[in-house]
Image (cartoon, rainbow, N blue to C red):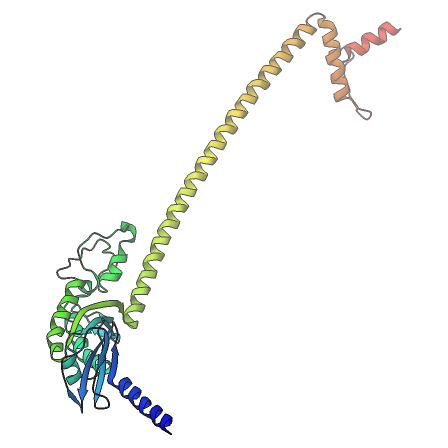
Length: 324
């Protein structure tokens, strides 16, 4: 019986010790309350700490930087261009006592950030032109003049298509707008024990109606550029083909000229050889030529009437006389 009582006493003591300590992690801070009232200073250092069991309750809050992600919203810029703006912010709890007294938990804190940051974002976006929300400086853009409309597409929706060399002057820029949003929202968060570390515009896009118009214009511009390239290519192809035909004719005419010269020289050489050969016996040459004429002009059914004194048949006549 005594042993059982001893175990009961030890169990009670262990339970009391367990309920009398609490652990604070590296990324935590604790506000201890007793019957709903804050006692002592907030605990911001990690370690093992003691409290009155059952009556003291540790309330844990994050000590590291937290993220607030805003809902994308449709906002008109100063130049009446409707855009979708998506923002986020970084914040942390710097006064856990105020935080506990006002918002109690991070869920409520995020709701307060919605109420304070979203109006500030809308206020400054509507106060500046689209190019101010997109760019942060007047640094020259690296793009070819042919495709100069790219900056126009991302800069302002009401710029004429032909004005591909439009120059935009950034007075404040995106980073300055973010700083002004931070400056406007931060004082309103002091009462909640929250410090706003940074506000960033993570995405800017056209609304659906404007986006369709921009995409249609971009497609038309690209088609115009493509047609220009095609026409230039067709002109270059015609120039190459014309040069080829001209070169072909030059080569053909030169070859024909050379062939005719060679042929003329060959014919002259043949004629010269024949002339020299037949000049050795002119009578024989006349006889051979006359026989060629007989062969080509007289056939089996040819009827010719000539005088007996015709020179055309002199060799036949002389042949008959010699035969007699």
